[in-house]
Amino acid sequence: MTAEGHEHPAAHPLTTGDPPPGRPPAQERGRHRRQALTTAAAELLHEGGFASVTHRAVARRAHLPLAATTYYFTSREELLTEAFALLVAGELAALRAATTGPDPFGALLRTAQADRPRQLGLWELYVQAGRDPALQPVARAWTDGYGEILADALRTTGHNPAPDGIRLVAALLNGLWLEQLVEERPHSHEETRALLGRTLAMLESAG
Image (tube, rainbow, N blue to C red; front, side):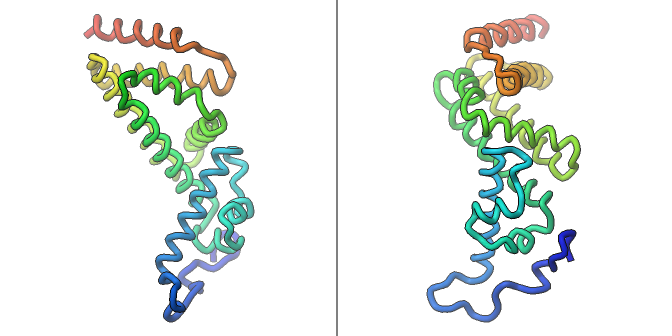
């Protein structure tokens, strides 16, 4: 039994026997339903943050029965972890695609200032990872992925700081990003670029 009083999926499969003609096999349908639930949870995180992800809301968004959430996920925490991973993967993919152009830092700054609810959901989950060990590997994947994208952007623009320098630049950009989101304190691209330029100059002179 799960914490919410439902049996584990293995105890009562939703489908048995051969599927009717024209229907996909049960295993394939299960993958589609699990993915639909994960996507629905990620969308709710995007729109309303951590508190908006309830079993009922996820099932409604995925157009599936309420029982499906506890059938495919042993707990809300498991569902949140997979949704967070999906949100992080999408954010990193968007950042990587945006920074392949001629102005990677401009793309980073524009992305950080766009779609405020999505960014708030991402950072809310990042902070929640400090309380939930299951979320910590996903938070590390975000940090590591962002650092790799930033390192590539730096190399593209002729800079090649050491790993600790990349962490310093990431901390600067993320700090400004959070100010923008949480305090709605506007930073112009010119101000941020000036801070970034001074930071890179200090790193290069110290190296």
